[in-house]
Length: 182
Image (cartoon, rainbow, N blue to C red):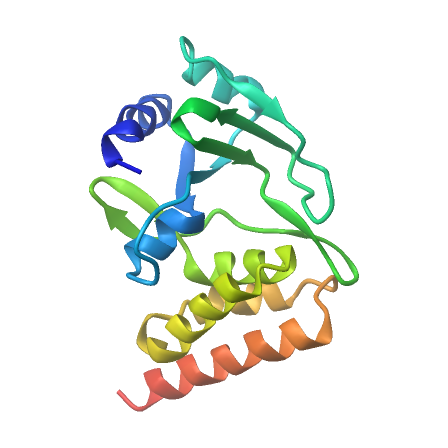
């Protein structure tokens, strides 16, 4: 996947003041965890109508977004460009629906990158264990970059199962112990 396919779309989001972040395999590629990008997964914080207005002139296909384990508000796709927009990013967790925040790690070529903590949880809940493991190992090996306040916010959700809760708690402990040793 080439960046030149996504840059004009990102500019449209920014011109319309739409909060977004790039996650999925784009995030994994950015973190040097995979060698290629499968598609562009962009989470947005706006209504479907606002997004469609911003993307005026592009043919969007509305896809199923509530099919288990997904519980997002909506999902739009530019199939030929392999770009998916996810509005109100949410997934079914063990004890209910978990709303995933639109958090940003940084920028890559002018594109706001998603939080690895959020996408670790997302991949875990999607049952995509190999990708979840890649992000978990990344976070464990980069304790200095862990956003432990974000994880603490995720841990406030009653929908998380015990295994995921334990994993997130251990990341918070690692991050805090790293920061206290500075």
